[in-house]
Length: 357
Image (cartoon, rainbow, N blue to C red; front, top):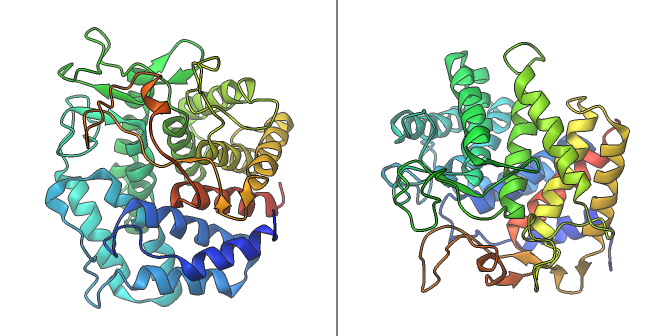
C-alpha cells in the first residue's frame, strides 16, 4: 500500500463523485456511513467536512432528496438516511429530519410479505434479500429512537428473526434471497430459497445485525438475535481463509474460479470488530479474526485503489445476465477497484479498530 489508510480515505473522498449522478442511493450511503464512523473514532473534522460536502448536495433546503422516488419502493434508498440523525443533532437544521421522515414514509407504505418483511423492491415482488436488512432496519431503529416511536423497533426485530429463519441453511450460513411466492426461477419450490451463499449478502446481514443490536439494550427482546449473531460470526471465522479473507461464494470454497472478495471481507472485519468492542460477541478470538481480516483487506489497496470488489450481484434476469443465484453465476460479475461498496466498509472497519475494545 502506497499511503496509510487515512490518507487514502481522504484522497478518495476528495475525488469521490456521486455514484448515480447525484441521485440519493445506497452506494453513496456506504461512504457516508464510513465517514460518520471515521469522525466518531478520530474526532478529526475532515471526515465531517467530507460528509457534509457530499451529502448536503443531495438534500434540498426543504429536506427533499435529489432523485429520490418513493413510489419505486426501492429498499436500497433508505440506507443513506442513517447519517441524517447525526447531521440533525450537530446542526439543528430541521431539513435532515424532514428527509428522514420522507424515507420512513416510504417504509410505512412499503409492500411486505405476509410474515411482515419488506419486499426488496417493487420490481422484486414477494422477495426478501439479505441486502435489504442492512438497507432498512438499522435506519428504522434509529428513526424510532429519535422520535420515540418504539413500535418500529419491535417490527424491525421481528423482521430480522423472520429473515434469519427463512434464509438459514446448514452450516450456520444464509442464502442471498427468499421468494415467498416461489414464483422466481431461482427459488427452490419447497423452501423459496436462492441456491447459494453470496459473501457480500452475508456481509450486509452481519453488519445489519451488529448495527441494530448496538443501538438496543441487552434484554429479553434482543437476547435471541444476540445469540444468532454470535453463531453467525463464529461460522464466518471458521471459514476465514489463511490469507485472512473470504471467498465470493462462501458455501463453495472449492469452486473453480472462486476468488477472495474484498467488500465482503471488509464487512466481516467491521462486524467482528464492532461486535467484540461493544460486547455483543465478547470473544477475543473474534476480534483477532477481525484484525486479521482488516490487515488483509488493507493489503489490497494498490496503485489503482482498493482491488478485488465484486461490482454488483442480484437475483433475476438483468442486462442479459440470467442472475440465477447459482454458485457459478456469482463468478460472472465484474470485479472492480475502489467501489463504494468496498471502500465504505473498509472505512468502517478501520474506524472500529481505532476505538478501544
